[in-house]
Length: 313
Image (cartoon, rainbow, N blue to C red; front, side):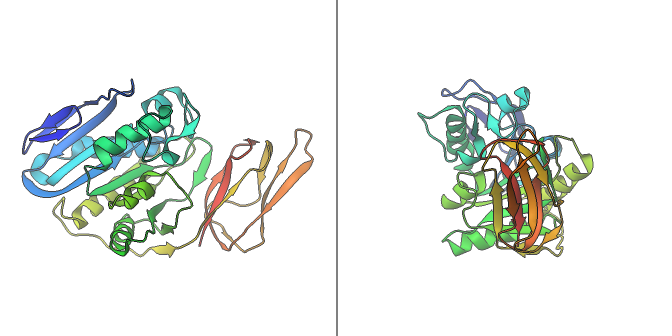
């Protein structure tokens, strides 16, 4: 018997239900697939950001279609990990505390809403997994090219295994992050000794079935590589990036980007500018490094401390 929070599933069985926690009111939908043979424990997440619909669709399809007879080990799939954000269509943040769930891990038992949700996910799901695959997909105001991310930690084995997993999605760009995104699922899990990655595909609050399939295929290829599924592991070329350079808004105003996603930029190149409500320039933003624009905020309205874009190199 596999016990997972308030749910349990027998050997060679599959169940779907809701994770419930005494700390929070939210109920998280989950698929639990307990394979007929022994193997690793895998956690697949979608919807950490509630408006990244392509990631939610991909996780949902994976949870629906995986069968115990084809799985070795245990796979938990949580397609909507942040239900309150999903149903309120809240970009980036949990609507109760305006905190980004993916900056809140490993969470706090006595914290705010996002911190409590992160704590529940960490204690119930992340700690029980050997591998964590967190699916994302560009929030409502983000355009992006598909990319994957892993955390570069002091543990060389965890770092290398995470890099290898992130390279198996058939996605061109693979970013080794050294801590630029603190409190994220993948960085927090890596620091707990887990092999963990994020895969990003889709954008701007649009359910993109082509990118959903890209994520689904990538997950299944990754599962084959760790022995959770049988089959040939597909190897595709990937560009390994060691820089993940974010730009943030220093002012509230109107954001006019000067670059596009997938564009290569030189160090010092103009990325865009923020103007006031009369169209007067407040600040221009220049590239701090050369590289490719991985994501770009497409909203004209911008708030102080909002992300603007990120460059990978």
